[in-house]
Each structure stands twice: as C-alpha cells, then as structure tokens.
Image 1 (spheres, one colour):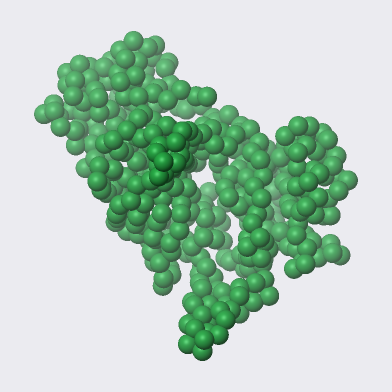
Image 2: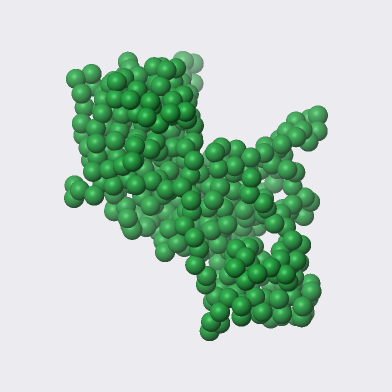
Length: 442
C-alpha cells in the first residue's frame, strides 16, 4: 500500500530529503505555480473485477446504449535545488506557513495512481481557481490567503469542500475535489485493485441544458492526504444527466389522479415515456452537496457502523464546462449477428472506452474488450462497459459478447487467473466477436 504523507511529515521531508523526492516535487509545484517539474507516466492499472449489473439496469441499459448512439458527439528558477532552497526558506521565515503548505490545486496528479481511470490529460484539464499561493507564501502576517483564488468552495460546520479542476470528455466530466475537515477523518477502507478510498456525496445538480434538477449520489474516489484532508475525483457520466423523464412524470400524475397503477418503464415502453437532452459542447452546472458518506476500516459507533456520515449544505457558484475534443473518437461499428447480438459503436477518450452493445429484449449478455496485446480492459465505474484505458494499447480492440450467466459462472474467473485460458474461453464461448481498428479513418 502506498504511503500517505501528513503535512508534518512533509515539513521534515523538505528539510532533509534529497531533491529528487517526489513529494517535494508535487507540493512545491502546487505552492509555486510558475515552477513546473515533469511527472512520470502512471503505471498501467491492474485489471479490475467486472461489476454485475442489477436487474433494473438490465431493463434500461441495452435500450439506453442504442439510444445514445443517436447523440451528436463532437469530436526562472532553473534547478530543482533552487526550488527546494526557496521552499525551505519560506518555511523557516514563517513557521506558521509550514503547517499550511497548500495541497489544493492539481488533485488529478495527486490521485492518479489510485483513481480507477488513471491519469487525466494535463493539457485538457481546466483549472477552477486563480492560484494565489505564491502571494500567500510571501505574506508573513501569519495568515494564509491561499483560498481566495478558489471560487468553487464552500464551508459548512467545520468541513470545507473545494472543486479545483475539471476535464470534460465526450463521455463524462471529471472534477477534482478536496474535502477538508477540522475534525480528523476516520481511517477509510481501501477499495478495488488500485486501493482507492471513497467518499460519496449526495448532490443536487442544475444543468443549463435541462429544465429539471438532477439528484443522486456521486462517488469521489481518491485518498486521504492526511488526517484532515481528502483529495479525490468525482466523475459525472453524461448518461446520468441527460435523461428527460418529464413525460413519465406526467403519466404518473395522470395515473394518480385516476387512482390507477403507475406506468412501468421497460425496454418496450422506454420511447413512450423517456427522452434525452443533448449535452452541448459548452454548458453550465451548479452543484449543491447535502451530505457526505465514507466507508471505514472499522466500526465508528453502534449507530453508524463502519460508515462516516455528515449532513450539511455546501453550495457552489455556477461552473462553465467546455468539452475537450482532443483525442476523442466515436466509432460506428453497426455489426449484429443472426441472434440480434452485436456492437453498435464505441466511444473513446484519453481515459476511457465505452462499449455500446445490442442485444434482443429476451437475451441478457455481457461484453468484454481486450487491448492489442490481449489484455482485458477493466471497468472504471459502476457501468461495466465504461472501461479504463490507462496502460493499454487500444490501437486495436477485440470485443467479445457472451451469454451473461455463462460468462459470470464459467468464464469470468479465468480473467484473474490465466490470461491465455481466458482468451481461449472467449474464443470458444462468445456469441459475437469483432475486432475494431481504432486507428482506421472511419
């Protein structure tokens, strides 16, 4: 497990460690924005176990994937030694600042080793703050003004939440989020193959392209930087914000007035009750967080068990989002076999690949994608078809679609035990197979 450093640990490191120490590189670069040091590429992620879709998801997802295909998708200081000298000098001149070396800023870099989707594209990341940390460090009045540049920040009952940056692809928005608590956080459990820690935020979100508010639970995946600070990334899938259920709500109101049973949304009735908003290239979002929840290593108390729960009201200014078009692809495949099973399209961004499969209403299937080297792409979210691509060569992608129960009961286990056997099983058992050359000009 990777070591997490507290601010006190950092102060010691700044005074004693060699100039190649990575922690120095990260912390000083955030404090002095003008000084940039290169970062090593994230090591390829271990494969992550597939997540079983629920029965309700089974009713909606196949049809949802076909509908989604209709969307339009646009594609000074010269040495490291000098940096250390300046940083240590600041701490010596003003000891009160040493304990408050800012960690707000490049959260994407901080948590990329544990975030399931890995590294965000640095050139396409948009900052949500004006960095005033240099000015704060130069002010020896004893009070830091570092937070003045963070406009997407709110404090409630001793907890400060800050949105620091975002990256918007053709599939989702990724927000960098810092949560600071005056009281120490409990020890959160680690999850997944990357050992990330998790805080869930109960949100209400208003988007400029839709008429109604979106409410739900957002995962903030990252890690504790110290006992009082959690840094993570919150991913907002467009499929969670583009559903227009106004016709269904109207049908429900009519049914209630007539004292009739409420209508059911199934694959057959989806078009009757549901529409989709077009997610534009630029739009605004205003977020409100009403509660936080984390899962801990040990029981906190008899009432909450191993769950950390905090209620509150954190409201943020409207934020303008602009989708990136760099390295974005939507590849229309449109292949279906005689059983009605196939691949509609795949979407690709620098961090993920999403499969859009086709299956008949009476058949439940499961799709698997392998990279050019035959390695399985693992899911990075609760949707088993949103796959993390960090560490994979996806110049060609092989997609297999299997019977759902057969895959879960007889094939899946080999993905973690024997790559060759897993590939052989897919070749033998798959109901559908296709190879997509992502370098081809479609």
